[in-house]
Length: 557
Image (cartoon, rainbow, N blue to C red; front, side, top):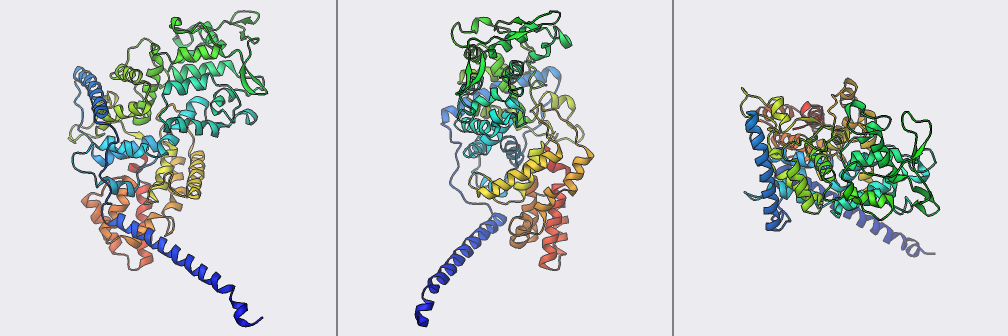
């Protein structure tokens, strides 16, 4: 074999390698150029819209104004003056935290700067968020905590991940909420192919079939906002007006649920029995609802009848429960606390009945409910008074005359740290390996920080170990270290056109606001004192670490 023949096969391979290297280099250069553009100026984008027909948007605004009027009347009666409207960046931060579990990216904020004057910012931002999977994925997890908790449950008959994915798909499609609830209560089939069945199978911990008691408690709390399970053992517990029979008659609707070869089915031969307090033996319990029995259908399986009763338009406890929970998800505090203990006959807080009626009349449209709440004056208020001599009082916060300041949940903290370390948006278009690493990092942080479990919205104070975990743990240090491939601080140091732009990019990425003149001067001077590229990168890493550990970063306001 001559030399020409020997080298022929290697030449194309070498050229292929060179071509790939050039392509990768070009892509890297384009990415760095894109990042440099983010640091220098607003991103040009097509003229944004809310994505809603004008008539629909006007109807949402009218409903929000009606809710505002009810709150204004309550404030006048209490002698409260509401604070002014908050700024645009704070508003989008609130929405991003509530619906995606993270702060907005620098990329998103630059796009926001291209909005024309007078644009409906809240509705445009909602349309922007709802256009991808982040809100549906995040809200699905929050709702799954209500329906099935956070534990993995009995593996052979339970797949939590499948249920969360099913919920996310339903939310992404904006499936009416009453349909979602009916599917969960009256689900049938195998838990792997029919994910909604997992609402029932998670209770099969004793391997004897669904736990009627746990299911009754879940239905009353999650879908009706009523804690009827407090009388499971005896009447009148903690002053409740409910009777022991009320709870067990509700549980009896699940008495026929059983597992067969083809999954979850209803067996007419099964009966629910219980030994009431003071009785010597168990007795068969008839299925009955604790209020509005006229809404219960005469025909159908017990679970089908219960599902119809729970979601009946006239059963307003169902719509109130979701209004209260969605308000809590957006404000991080419910209208009625605890979130699952709403008085059946009232009195109700301002706005609740109006929002519940609107939710019913528009077919249990969750996206519309979100848009109406976000359009209210209450959601768009500042959390601070413009007059330092008259700061916001607890009474004003409790009456929603100011936006309540609340601590971020653990997954919001972790998600925000990771998003702040990435100048571009982490969404469904992000590489799957990066998203997988993000999910693992968030889960590990939540476990160490302390998972709050089901969505109770109890504002537990931060502990010293939690603060030390933030300051000394890997989550923040790994996302602020000197690493040009994954960390924003290093890329900002390398690509920002000047020190002032670098400081501004850091503040926008972490606090979702620009620095004050004093803050800008202070950190610009520190960066200017760096004598080498490495020392400048270290200074930017220190700035990132400092801002992420600041109190402002860990609160929603």
